[in-house]
Image (cartoon, rainbow, N blue to C red; front, side, top):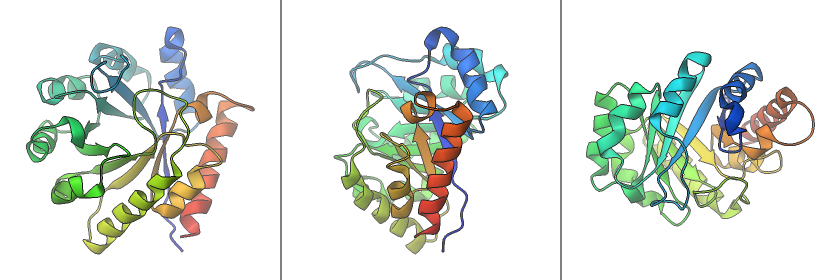
Length: 228
């Protein structure tokens, strides 16, 4: 039985942007472990969201960690801005980065933890040669760009393959999933091998209190991990 503790990450994409600071504080109070900032440029994905100044303005309001998920073409020129804004983890997409090994090294040199994300159509093999450079691998369980999408259960094979690669090579980094994560899906993602779970709509919307919804997700993730 696997007894590792799951990490619950909140995407603030479905938050009320007019009260973003209060939303971030509510998430911390509810027991969420860190915030994911879905940074979109309107090119890599058909949407526009947060810039570093928005993230920086929210950084003093909470003590939990921030991760920047850069769904942008050519993230390299702005990497320092996200670190300066207060993001401890910087996640770039393998599909958007020309020299991935170098980009991951630059993130580490900036003092942040380096993450790499894979779109659903991108095979795990696209990153196997850089896994010794990462602190986090993010397997997308939807196509990036918009919140509220349906979880792609077919990605569980990729999650399981990533977990096997981590364990067989004796690597030590977080395996995160993002997209359609809810009470009905988080257990399957956990059983497949994920240990970090990013949820947006399932946390910020739905019945009960935010604290209740966070607890339901965490309990379901624990059960999934323990059943491996």
